[in-house]
Length: 470
Image (cartoon, rainbow, N blue to C red; front, side, top):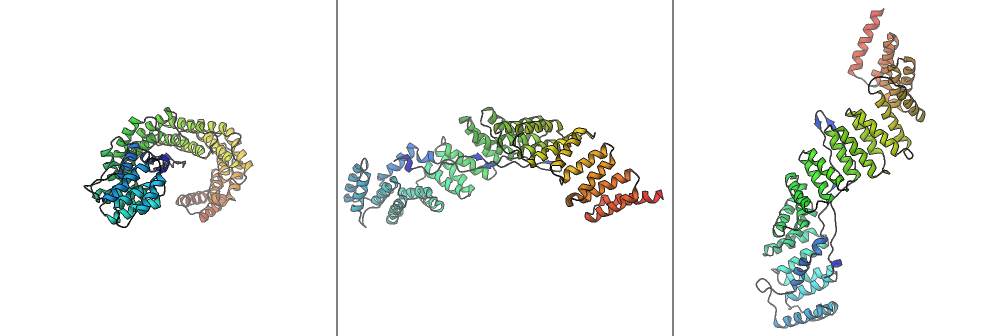
């Protein structure tokens, strides 16, 4: 039987290239997870397994205990066909078709189905197998062949029915259990898939495909302990298999063991099979655990692995590091990003980096000329950049230049998204100068645009201060 006629599909376990989201609510950490595509285990190994082929070809024989009786005339036909099949498969097929009669044994239909199957004519083969079970409903080998073809044709319901009937008839074997598991898994019905794969693995404990199928089934049911244990065995056998390291990392995240997941992703880097996704995920894990220096290292590795990738994820990583109090690490990663994309970065991303740089410069609370120059550069690129205008106003307020601060806030007040905040900021500058009567109208305008309890209280305080001055 030629391997090219037996290959069903070859589907590998792999990560997607989706970014990992980080978030935090209260004190609860949002554990990052790799983007993972849990596809079915590869079945080409099954179709090409010599033992499997032998078991299929052996189906041309006769088992008198469980199969239909074969008349003497049909035995003679089968003997001749068996001789022709070695070198003249089409001739054997023609002879069988010419010899086929309504009263012929179901074994003749089975043999004809096998010959069509070997020539990759699945629909014809399926018809002959169904003819065989119609003649002899307990024909176990025919049910098995129906299950195989239905699996090949992605008719999973038909395959499940056929394999179940075969197993009911006492024909349980590892391949049928394994393919039954595959069919249930393809229908996202993971409980029966798990049971079928466990039976297959019991009969063939060294079969990697069955172990993979079982791993997938328990993982999909969030039985992470089982999945981690199964993957531990696979990694012992295949320590250079990147998919296994990734999947086990994912199971550790499911078990709330992020540092174990990190160890797996570090191992992946050590064997030279890390990806941008795996290193970004590793950085996110370290970030969520507060290990900021290692987070920065992982993010920098992600850049080195593919320098021509879009900068969006790296920019987001800088922001996350800064938000977690890692100003030093954020500055280091910022420098890396600026160096890597110095010639190719888009204006939008360039403005983002400039704003991040300005915020980092202002993070310690002391005004710097560097931050001001950076913000002025942003505003020059986009005069309607509300965030830059607000930051620039904040800078001039801190540096003791109220007139410049008011100018920037007034420009921001013309932008709807920040108008209310900008008016409050102008009012605060006026209050600091004792100009209460000028501050009150601005505060009331801001409260009309976006009512806030803190602004309402501030208005009351300014009103009392204004009356006290009178």
